[in-house]
Length: 177
Ligand SMILES: [Zn+2]
Image 1: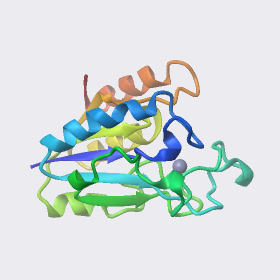
Image 2 (image 1 turned 90 degrees about the vertical axis):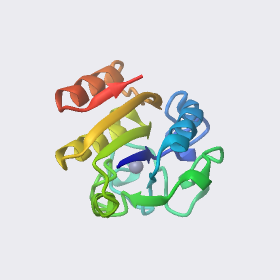
Image 3 (image 1 turned 45 degrees about the vertical axis):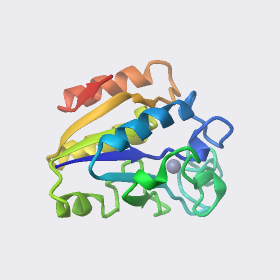
């Protein structure tokens, strides 16, 4: 059993959003295609309290983004929601980063309850939440494939996307186009 994890394809991570990933909305078409081929699809959402510790006003490094129940936290409107089986919200605890979909969530239990052994990972952003989610999936013992064409990197520092790919491969994650 394989599952697709669609990481954080939310308005705030797309062009015009509070923490836009360059070309972030370009993943939508590829994500919808992967979801159409998958038997079980989980979408994660960054779902922060308004005073999340990752925000600049709280001493963090990111602009205020994906505050729960705001338009910026909604999934991109062109994501085909009919193909998503479960939404998992993360980053809800003020003092936890919440990059990974597995951090402080029911995701691992959910996948195990469905008999999932392999996960495909796509979404935003490659060098943060996609990487963290894929690494945690690998640590949890899943067979993990990241779909490069269905992700984009933030690239706070040039080359972060490539470094993320190297780190993923070193951890035993397959990275495919
Ligand atoms: Zn966040």
